[in-house]
Image (cartoon, rainbow, N blue to C red):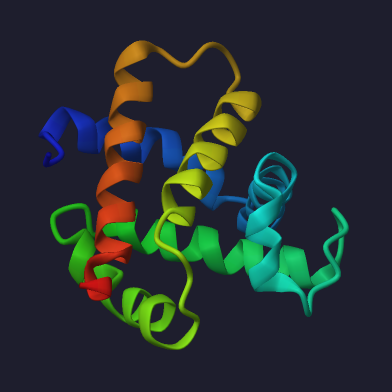
Length: 142
């Protein structure tokens, strides 16, 4: 499932708002992930998991910055996320099921901060983008 030119345009347009404030947006996504899927907290046992903790804000920024890099490289998302895929598979050993969970939390957060309803085309394009991103991140697990 590749991204069409129309999908890429929708993703770029929707992501513009997110990339302007990566720390706050990323922190909100992580808090949403930890609340909805408490088992994901096991990878962050050394973090202060409160909403405004510096660790959550810093890691949230890393997540959004990595996804912004993917948005800037929509024609080669696996290449853009290759090092991150290696890190999560080989060093951190994050269960691959967590990437789609985070993707869903990102979409929900995006919808919460949208200044008007997200249209179906944008939602579909963002969902496809998150699926391609998740697939790229688990590529090194094989």
